Length: 76
Image 1: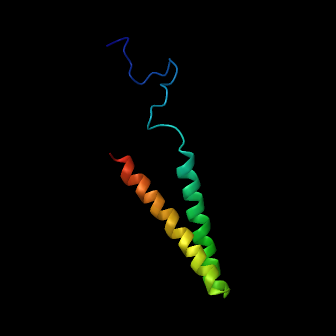
Image 2: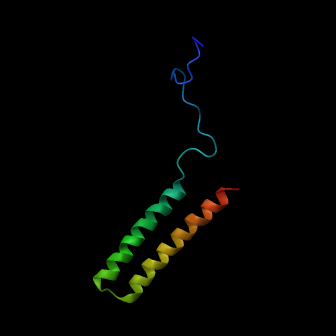
Image 3: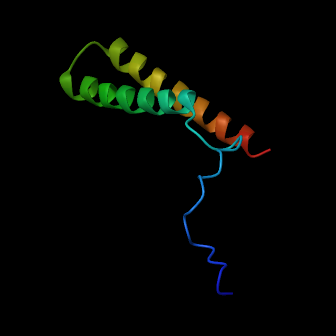
């Protein structure tokens, strides 16, 4: 066992497989979810027209649903 150290970083890192890397759609959906939830909260406390609050809530709901669907489909 003198020459086999599994924790030694001498070679190049392994290439990212199909599950690795950055998923741009997922990152955009999370950004949209956070921004629309913040806008929904600001619209709730700001006293703006109710349709603005409903629109922000709808975008929040759709982005959360899309993230959930992508997560569930990715398990298969």
